[in-house]
Image (tube, rainbow, N blue to C red; front, side, top):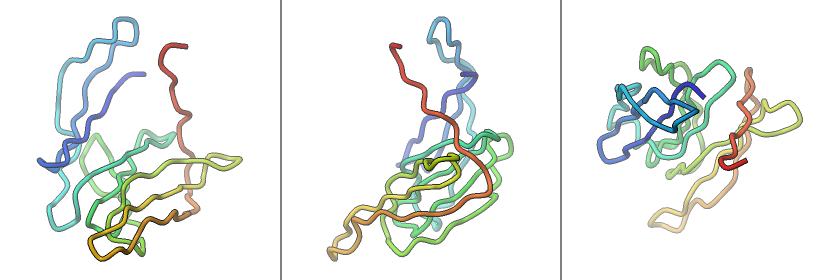
Length: 129
């Protein structure tokens, strides 16, 4: 509950804001990650227990793990689908990454993929509870 991230797909940027959980206010916008255009466009995202970002790369056949402090790509998981739309942690130990894809112009895609990670995901925060 310290930061909030926003993906702006057309600019290839993931912004980070300081987040005040008591007031809901955002401040101090910075660029956490700038995804190179040849890697695909950032789409869905999740966060692991180390604070690293896992980003679905639309058109990039991959999910990438980034350090939001440095913008460095730490890991790239190749996926056998072009349009990777989202990723989420799950499983009994929250160490399994589920990856979704969308159908491309050729009618390929629309699958769910699974990847065993070496880290754990964060629990989802439910607003209004």
